[in-house]
Image 1: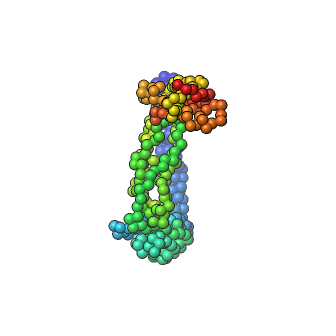
Image 2: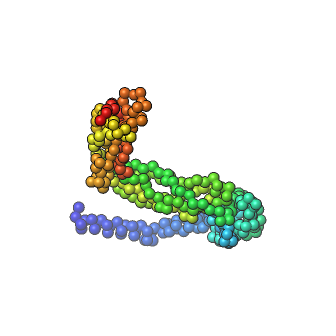
Image 3: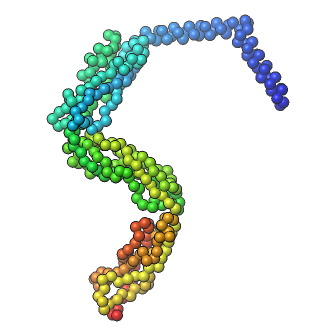
Length: 332
């Protein structure tokens, strides 16, 4: 289809639409729109006079605490209040809901056990005084607040990573994920603080990794406990790995000077995984295998388990083939 033909059809469409909407013979369309608008207006006016109910978010403001006292649990910014009233009043409440806010003096509810319990039912008269006389308060949620006060009770606790790590094929974690900081300071009433030994992160389910990654992970909230920070930085060192095999001789450990060990076979294959960055560093001399004299003379078994005496820290999934050998004790 040529451009001129396309343009002609577009012009025809707009001319036809113009005639349909704006010529005198289509006045019925405007009459329809007028009555539709009036119907919507009457419906809106009627709905504002009808009684209905809605849930209002009432803001909460908290008074300042002394420097040596803090509340360790997280407090809500607002409460939910279900109100029944005329539609016009409900609309007005939503628009001016900040004026319905409550201010709480927290120390007023501090008890001897350093735990405060506030029943929000007692604030119904205060909230109702800010509403129209025709209003009804049906429900307040939550129905109460719990406050955990602490006077500078604190402890530094280690952070435990709670994560599931999946690695792409031929990739490995070079070392354990690092957490910064490794310890966080926590504040809580002594009755709670004494029972804590560590702080966990929220569960982290990582996608399949094939490269190193760092991320912020939130700490798992504990009721009544306040952390000096809400998250930690976790680094996952990921590299491609390769498999290495060495033949390592089996040596005698703590043998008398006049005796020596003969093992069959005399060497054992050590296989392990190592990251490519450490591949050039690892050597056969970094490994030592042995069997102790005491274990040998006290054993009644024909085959003795080979012990791994020395190995680099950066190798993983190390295995011995075979892991047991025949042994003889000979005089020098």
